[in-house]
Length: 92
Image (cartoon, rainbow, N blue to C red; front, side, top):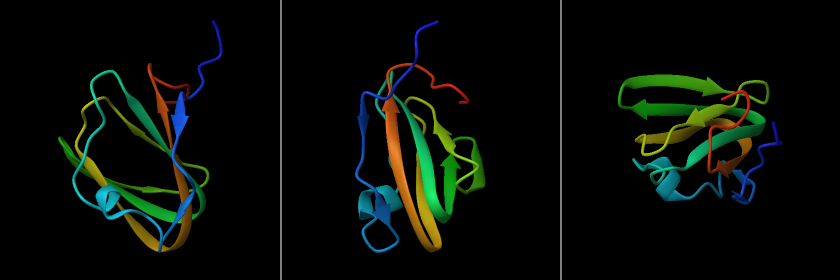
């Protein structure tokens, strides 16, 4: 099986530079998976359908399925980045 690599990644955001759009309800497009990687600190990922909260850390990334509504909330100082895939990424 070929390596599955992201086709695009966001810049690295911290608690101050994290865009308001990521802090509010949003989703990925059809056929797009997102993998939220925390580089430092902690980030709360809130899934809206079905409702649940997960705390992400450098050892625990968060998978976003295509068209899955969600938002994120920094839990103190943190750094994070989102990788986008056209199929489910490994470990997701």
